[in-house]
Image (tube, rainbow, N blue to C red; front, top):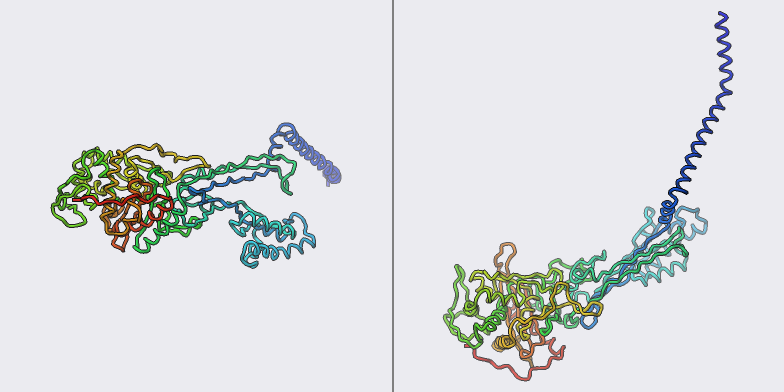
Length: 610
């Protein structure tokens, strides 16, 4: 071994001996450096929070301490013309359970439970279930699964519970020292008369959304505007002296209808009997005050319960009286004769000779009774409801002028009554072919709604003034007009013409054998109609019918108009006179004394028809 190598080994040995002494010092320096860096970062962050971003962070902290609570607006009521409530909102709540709060006696695993907490929590589900059964019904056992659910902290126990009931329940829970039940506001729309005028009023679904009828068309006005409360809170609830901002709710408007609920009920009962007796698909009855256009009854059947719309059948939940289109049949002759007389084209006493049928291409138009060429007075053509005679008269008048009369009576346009989904009907243009003019004259080749036709006939019999039909009379007690409706009355025919057409209608009633066309003590005027239904699929007649009858009384001073329409009757003759006539008669007989209409001072007299 050389001297150099020996020396190197000693030096290496000495270096290894000193290293353990230097290593702790180096580590301490690194640690101190890291600590300094951390403190520097913390100081910088503190400077940022406290100096530069203090306002933003304070705002964020305040926001986290704030709670926002929606204050639901109360939906407006709907009442009839006398103030009877048809729809209102009941303050109800959904009862909510927190199983976790129940089994921890409110500690929520954030604090240790004492022995007393455990004892209360063990007995709580059964005690709460017993109280629920007492106030909400059912048995205690029916509530226990929800109250003891180990995987949930939110269980809906019951829906639509009256708020007063929950207050009583909550008071008893508090007195017993029980926790874990809360409520969520869930107002319920109530319809105290169930099916009464349901097709007109509509309904509000379980989510509080309007889904049909006036409830939907007046939604923005009925609903109101929700309010809001924003307040400071802590884990223990609302901070008494904290900030509190309150924006009150603006409740919805209340609406009064022109409908007479009592007469509506009687009409609906009589309508239901018609459906049962005739096996008809559907029916509608309208009662109008011809002096004002106010709709006193707007009945549809079959119907549904507005409280339980889910159980209704979709085809029965609309408003057929304002939405279903059909050809009016011979009821249209009221309007045709009004135009012919008012224009000076004919007079009621004119004698008219006409054939047994009129041929149009491959079609042949006949009357309901067989006859050859005959002569009747214009009055007789109306009273006997001759299609051929009516066409013969209508051909004497300019098409454009005749069409203008029909339009002035409101045909081919919506009445804008405020009923959602109201149909406009169809009235051909003035350039219509001659055969279309012939059809319209006796009630085919056009379409109407029952409400539209009732208003048109009303304008003819009331002295010649058209009043747009109204179903909504007031909002918050003040007069109300539907947004698109023009309430201004307009003259459509002369008073003299109106008187002559009423006389024609009285002759039709006097010359009918049926008792449906007479009411003891009153002179009445009527007109029947029968037409075939058109299929939307083939645009052709489908072999089914729609029949109708209109009645007006007293005929010398019309105060009540009743229009009955029945779709596809299968029994009792399936004609306007045999099916719709009795329905019209019974409702008119109920309405006249209800409104204290004085009986006629003299009986009607039959006038010559031939």
